Image 1 (tube, rainbow, N blue to C red):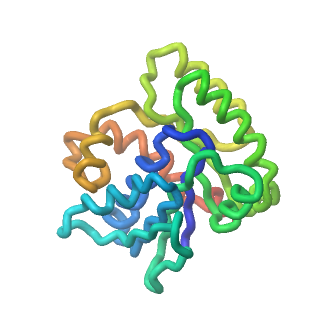
Image 2 (cartoon, rainbow, N blue to C red):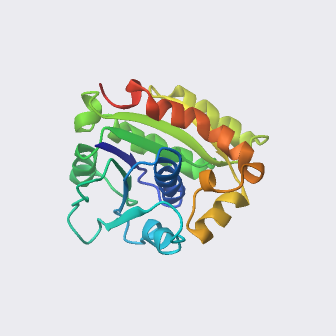
Length: 213
């Protein structure tokens, strides 16, 4: 069973957006049995699931903030939406659950500074420090022709972990969230640019480099 977590101690960086779109990718594109575990008290991923149309591939939801993480037996992929402000022993416990972590970072000075502090802690944590859990970063909600994006890009490239892709700031993600779908389930003519931006992340997730093996 594949276990992937979207994680960043900084709130508001788009963890739920990436988690829900990953869940839809595995369920729709790869026809996997997917469980979406929401560890965040805000429950954004579970709210997305409630809006999901009945005629789309089923994604099982799990309120991991309030209940033990017990996935259905047929589950092939678990996508975990981590809470904000996680650190110390709680961070170590979360890292133990997964072999792959995706860290989204926004293009703002506050987010870049917070990410620098968080990455220092994450890279010395348990399975990550032993290279048993692999980490990659994603630049999220980006407008590329800006000075702050250049600063974010330079920062992410300076990290000793893969900087796999940049996801633009677009209303497509908001439309998908409202409907309970992912961009992979929307009309290709509407989201072709976004699908291209996701391709490097999907390619990395499919590789052995992302799985600690």
